[in-house]
Length: 527
Image 1 (cartoon, rainbow, N blue to C red):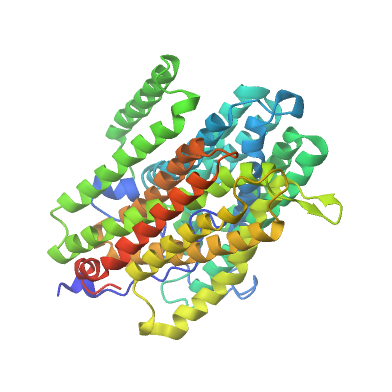
Image 2: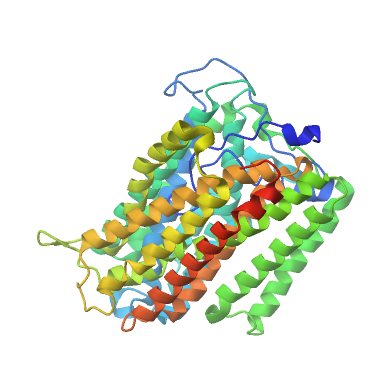
């Protein structure tokens, strides 16, 4: 066997790239395009190897990244908790009065664009600015986006705000984890615990954001909720601005600087891309009602290009090429999973608004509070799953089995809506949604952290971060599809929607389980 194939797989802490978790994995997309252009893999994880234990046994500098990521997730999920409602509520209710199908498509397109933007953030970090600077500037862009949503009226505020938040979140997501990696030397045994603590910050933000912005929206209107998201990001940015000067020099390095003679070309490409988008928008080819479809096509094109570049490379061995082929069915299952899971922010929001009984002893719980249920289960169950896999060791199910079970459980979660389907207002008890979101979380923990981990194991040496970028592209594609699918949701005729999507997911999972042996054969010893 090629010596490269006997390397120790990366240790990836439990966490999902989306849902409640954002960027909670030690793998990062940083270097994705840089490596494609240069044939190298440029992730900054050299560490400084000090004995600083002032932050719960971790280096004190972790506190700065912990809080900027926590406040970024607070603002991201806080804004997303009220975003769809803002778009389809009537003008009299403080919203924009969009058709629900258009609004859900925009939410899906926006979520997909966040993950597409991780590629841009990775490239800028590895070729131009370094991870730490991209993280800092991305936080500023995110805050500007939330301010735009809060202060710019109506559709202009929506457009400017979502573009800035999507691009900024992609940049921060691509680089925050990389900066955390620079705090530890390669042999530092605290690394996994440090990432787990970082992951806790992500989930605290995801938990608190929808609750507080939802309360602000209920009391003072949507723009108050958006303003609170902006304030949260401003708090995170302020504390990070003071702490960033002490971060390791490695976090500021540009691993693979772009040659000066190529900068003009890249500027031209960027300006050309922007011009094409502007022309497509002005000509009516890209519209609000087809935005999700556009993002799906762009993401699908990027995915095919990535797979083609990796599989056609002369720098990978036959075993590595086989493993990439083995990753393809896992990628497809991941897309199927996220296309259902991400409907928390589309269909489930509408369902919670129109069907859910949110009365708690005479107090009506705001709709966005529902978005905080999943982070609670993530915080509780992630440790349980990590302990379970550790206890089972080599006896634990293989990755294809986990993927198959995960998407089957996600399909079952959709079928669990059926007992209350086609009901009237307030017909679904709150405990039913809590139970369904518990099932969502179990499915997530079988797919998301497992997917990140196996991606690092299957990745060829020279395309290590590209494979992580590919996993993020599965999330981008699934998120955009979730927005596109939501247009078919009819609150007055829900049975076909939940039945068909649930059945498709279960069949996809059964197909994955039936293919375990050939997939493991392609994975060449990776389980």
